[in-house]
Image (cartoon, rainbow, N blue to C red; front, side, top):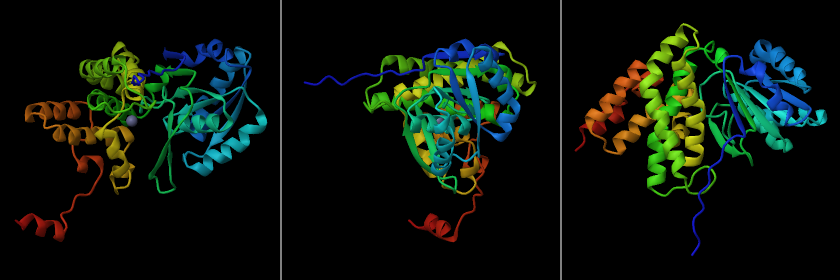
Length: 332
Ligand SMILES: [Zn+2]
């Protein structure tokens, strides 16, 4: 009888704290002497020089490659064409989610290792081997898998607190769902992102992520509004980037993330941030799980406290009851 394999994956190193970018050089130098930095124009303008200098200090040559901002297959091809002749040892993906994924896409095409530097704690992407491609209409096209997780993840909390506040709440949304999705996936014996069974450690991380958010997210949100790095911010960023990323990848996903396939095709909802889409979808998942009304109401209260959408309308959809809908409501 074959014993189903349990697999747990993670980056080699995770660095978090104010000024992490300036301290990352020694970790990057272990990957080789040359890198390509992939970031969009804004991110490149804000942080390109600083990343370049941090690399140079550690003896790493850093070439800068500007990303258009749209993570579509053609753009990954274009970037790959620019980076290939540079013959670099590794790729650095920097940005709020798409910049990181663009870096992963290029590294994947060129079979190089990748370093991720999130400029916002808005998704679970930084620690993950997965990246997402969209079509030109912003519809989710497919999820690609790199053979390995990022080598180094650099989370500079001084930068994270300067990102737009909705990015921070989206990160909370993308993370709060993990406890419930991992529990569903593990309970049903579903595969994780490695196509294997989950280790109990993944479930423990998803639970820790939830507990951390419930205890500290509200304070952290207030601190982010004041652009202040605090202990609450550090704890919540660790939950939204590290616990959330490792939890879903090694634990598996369920209804909340599956619903992004549909929501990213619906007018209004499609423009919402990923973390806001999955947060709304969690309320659907909890209803499907037939959770007690009090439990769902408690979750809604938390959503209000941390500015997460509790309805399709709050997600950006214009809800109008069509005639057909009104007729079918009257039908027996
Ligand atoms: Zn997600």
